[in-house]
Length: 190
Length: 190
Image (tube, rainbow over all chains, first blue to last red; front, side):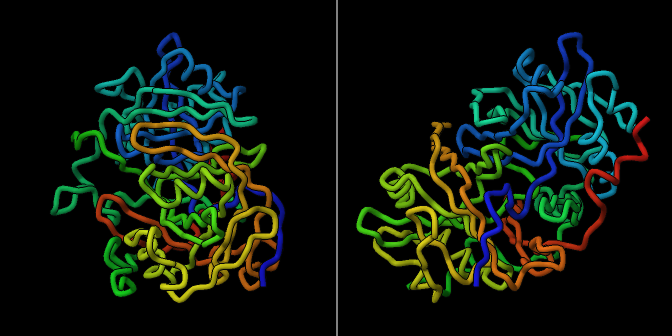
């Protein structure tokens, strides 16, 4: 039996995307965005939604470039901090004790301690109510060598990402593998 | 030390979104979409990317309505099946042994066995390379009473959602809570 709980931004799982940008003077900033995800396979693209009041909005508009950094679970406090402090008067990355470095291919910083970094150029922006959705073409992905598995791909148990539950306002780790994709459903195919 | 692995649609975590639609004749269909996420708080909106070759693209264009259904981990095979079978000649929901029901507020079906359902009306669509991104205004969320926690919100350990790892093409469950959001980072605030 289903019950209506109203029009809410409920979804499982929400990602924890740390969006890193420079301002016009080259100062790095980081924000925590749960509203986003991959939006095209080719060109590989990621969408992140940002409100106009954010420092990150100003930076994205000025630079048209950003990185999406994926934090490991051991950095959950730092990631949460990026969501509750404003970058307007604070160097949040330094205040969190983390290291901003310049991305190789785009005019944006990334956080050295985070294992996965998507380097993105803004390809378009879309107005959706109170949020502006910035669509970034992913021009490169850089990962810590320490999180690569034997097959050369990043391994979930080494990346150790986490996710956000908007219903209970909690962060959760990722559990064990439960099935192979493009395989588990084969038995149902006629 | 970071290593370039090229321009890829890597992100953690990807959701497993089952997009349900009717065709012009009222036949239900379901597809498995990992490219999507919440894209605005107000009006509450979700974005899902669909290729033009899909039956779901045709249905979305005709009906301008869809649901996003979140499957529990016990339905991982059915969810995977929705990603590897085409709806052009098959009633995938019936073939998976699941039940399509009509959404209360939009002209789209949902899957009764899945615990969380977002009822959506298409508000705009955006061309992003090989994908069309459909933005849906969430007009209601309906959840199984059995997954509600004591506070009236859906509880993660009852919803039991899962996620997709595109690097290793595996599905993973959700792990335990690791921190409170809007709280874990407070100690870093000056």
